[in-house]
Structures are given as C-alpha cells and as structure tokens.
Image 1: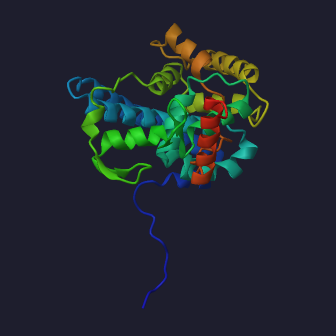
Image 2: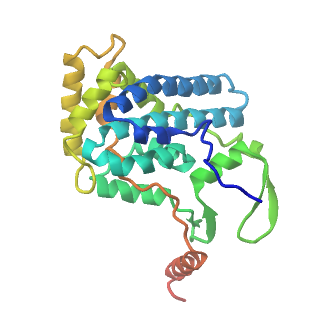
Image 3: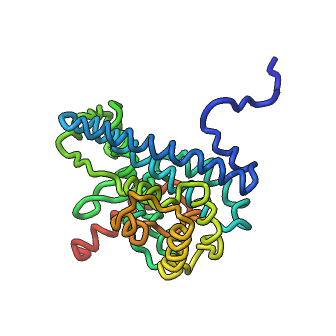
Length: 292
C-alpha cells in the first residue's frame, strides 16, 4: 500500500529557491554564489591545461569550465531582467536553463554572436537547439544535435545507433586527435565582469538598476545594449567597484562580447520529426541533381 506525503527536496539542484526570495535577498544570494561559480570554472580550466598529453580528458574539463561560466552568465541575466518581469521568467531560468547542458552550451557559444536584435538572437539559438539535422555535401545524413553528441561521445564510452540501425560502440578516445582546446570565451567574459566589479553585491545592484529600464524581448538590440553598458560601466567606476587588475581587454570583452540579455529566450531542444528531415533530404537531393 503506497502512501503519499511531502516530497523531500534536500540536496543539490535547488536553484528554484531563488524564486521565493525578495529581489534584495536574491541579489545577496547571487552575489555570494558568483565567485564560487567562477572559481569552479577556473579550477576546471586549470586542470584541463595540465592534461596536454590527454586531449580527450582535457576537452571534457574544458567543457565543464565553459558550462560553469555559462551558469554565471545565466544568473547575471536574471539580474539584468526588469524587476516587474522576473516573476514570470525566473521559474524557467532556474529550473530549466541553469541545469540543462545544451542551454548552458548555447549560452556560452552565444557570447561570440552578433545578432541585429533579440528576435534574430532567438533564430540563432533555434538553429543550435535542433534535436537532429541534415549534414553532408548533399544533406544526405541525419545526425543528432552536434553540441550534445560531441559532449556525450567525448565523455562516455557508449553504444550508439545511427540511421542505418546498426548498433556500434562509441570510443571516446577517438576524439583525441581532432579535439582543439581553446580557453572558453564565456570564462574570459565572466572574469572581465569580475574585474570590473560587476560580481559584487553593489555591482549586481547597479546592473539591476541600469538594465531594468529596457526589456529585451523582440526588436531591442545592440544600440540599446551599448547605451546600458556605458551607463553601467560609468556607475561601476563612480562607485569605486572596478578593481585594480581591470584592463582594457576586460573593457573590450564587456562592450564587444557581453551578449544581449537572454532571459526571455527559449533553449528547449527542438524535436524534429523523421518525416520532415527525410522530406528536406529529398528536396536537397533533387535540387542538387537538377530534377533529373
């Protein structure tokens, strides 16, 4: 006989607790956590750098560093969200985006994109969240989401099945010769935000005050973002929050690579029907051969 009772929520993955905090308490808590998240990302990256003779293992750690950095950027975007809008967005952000591998990888990758506005940024994200897509010179192959596949196949030995239906083993060490490890831009960016004083409690307050004036949901883009970034930089400087270690490179990262706020973006994996992919493949084939 089964009995129903209160679900125990002790343990990790409890970022939903942010939903029940006041705005001020939430900023306090995020300010406490951001240095911890950054230190975690740095630790993974430093460990990756020591494994030059083990490129597969180094790539796994570099991926962890990138995803940890993305966590920091997600939390900072929560701070950038206009206070009247936080209530309807925070649940998705802290329950889904913050804990989802693909969402974090897209968040990190997006820091190098240059969209014209928020609507185009969502289009870029949509391209990255396709569950499967066509690949090959004539779009002849149906392949899984590359970011997820590369993450999993680099990390784990596993059994996988491709379109022909034949099971085969994935050997994660096969990625060793093709893995090129680069320092995650997301980590560079979070370090720049730290140097400029944004990760402090006062820095987060300034970020919230300045960025709350514009809700980035559709047509808003780099023009609005640049103006708010200038206002924030001036305030961080006037309040003495910029650290002595801040450099021109940190400022360039702030101005050139801090992406538009993504608190209203959809990062969920898009499941593409097999029939749709097959139809697109047929169309690509006939377009290539000219209908003959």
